[in-house]
Each structure stands twice: as structure tokens, then as C-alpha cells.
Image (cartoon, rainbow, N blue to C red; front, top):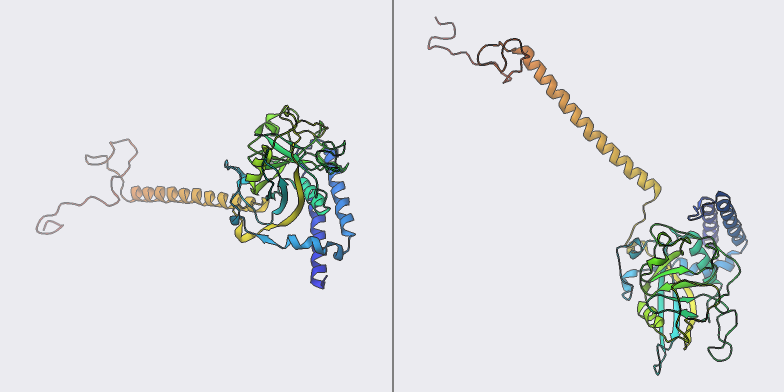
Length: 372
């Protein structure tokens, strides 16, 4: 790696340390748990810094590859969510799939491209990137599909043994053994094409398994559940045709319920293998091609400050106009008081308010004002 690359590596590492120290853990009410999470993040970042720049050279490529979301046209149905937009710098990954859609049909191959939202789900996104860069998902299959609901994968033990569907007994309940806390953000929800983390009964038990919503699944959002819901962290940008086709692959038995399960369940196991050839990082959304914009806290404060200044100037201007108007009225009255006679605005004993700012004209005869 060049000197410039080495310098960039250490700058990136220091920035990760800064983010780890300031990350806000959403959905974790326990302060001590939040502190432990931040400490764990910091340790993970510091451990990552022990890797040599040469070890990270291959991983740097995708971080410097800028993508234009305008080239993707096979996306989900939009519903006015912040997830509809692509944001500068967001990481993007691709799933290469190979599957048989139904009986007596030929195999289909394609790609599912997904944009992640690290600004709203930093821990979950980093967890996903780590697993992708470790090639954890290469060669596995979708082990659970439910039409009009979700397609689920991400279990590293779900690989065929000999001939499909023969696989390991742990398929459907496997993972890495390392869990992450549940993250929620008001900008994230189970829109059509959303990707989320599978988990067990413990809200903080998400590991490596994930699912893609084949249609909107807001019943999994935290506000619609009494178990804190499920974490979403990205959305499909390209390849929804494949997601919908995979959801319709015939299964060995009818799946029951609409819960995302980590525990073993054969319900919803595809009769034909929905093979994941590889999952790899693709790049980041280019700033000039971003369709959405994130407002930082400082920008919001500046915006509020500007609004307050504008309102203050507007109020001050109104006050100045009123003061000037009152002053002109006072001066006019002082120079030309009301006489209380017919023609004035008030009668005797009342406060006089002059009708005009100039004195009334005195009728003159043809010889001049003195009558001579």
C-alpha cells in the first residue's frame, strides 16, 4: 500500500474510534447496557486497527467505488418513506442468487442490490459488513420463504450436504454466536423490500440471519408489537423481481405464523434450493448522485438559528414602524392641536387626534392675506 493509502487507513481508523465513542444506541433503555455496547464497539475498532494496511487493501476498493442509483430500475414499491432515497456515502452490497422458481422451470440467476443506512443503524450495518467481508454468506441458501411476507437467509450452517435439501440439523438456528443489540430509528420501517435482522425471543439476540420483506411488513415494526419489534437497516434498490420470485418458490410445508424465527423451523423450507453464490460489497452512493440529504445536528441548529434571527428582525422591524408612526402622530398633534371647534375630530374635553398632518388652509380674499 502506498504512503497515501497508509495515511488514509489511519485517518479512517481514528474516525471509527471517534464514532464508536459517540454512537447513540437506540432501543437500549438500560444506561449500563448502552455503556457496555459503546465499550464493546471501541474494543472492536481498536482490534481492527491492529490489522496491517496490507490486510485492508482489498477491503478499501469498495469504499472508494462510487455508485449511481439512477441505473437501478427494479426496486420496491415506494410509500413516501425516508428509505425511498439514496444518501451519499451509504454502503451497498449485492447478493448473487441461483434458484428454480417452480416445478418444471429452469434455473434463474440474478442479483439483489441493497443499500444500507449506517446513519440510522450503525451497529447493525457494521455487523453486516463484517460478515460480508468474512465471506460468511457465500454458498448458503434461503432456508425459509413465505409468500407475501419475507425471504430469510443468513445462517452459515444452511449449506447443502450432498444433494439438496440435505443439510446440517442446525440449519435455521445457526449463526456466529456473536449477537448485537436491537436498533430502531424513526426513519426505518418494514417497507416493501426492507432488509432486517432475524432474532430469537430476546430482542438483543440478532446474530447473522437476515430477511428481506417481499411486501410491506409493518406488523414487524416496534410500534406495532409488544416485543420491541425487529431491526431494519437497508432496502433493496435492484432485484425485487428476484425477491418476489424467491418468495413464491414451492415449500416443503406451509409456513405458519408471521414471525421472524431464529429457532429451527422446517416450515417454509424451499423444495428447490435458492442458492446464494456470493454476497459482496459493491460500493457507496456517490455524493453527486444522492437523491436524499441527511441534516446533521449542527445544520439543524444553524437552520433554527437563522429562522430565529429572521423572526427577530421581522418583529424588530414591526416595532420600529410602530414607534415611528407613534412619533409622527405625536409631533403632528403638538404642532397642530385640535381646537375643539367644528371641523376638528374631537369635541372639547376629549383627546385630540388630528385628521391631517398639515394645518387647514385659511380662506384669503383677492387683496391678500392681511385684508388690506
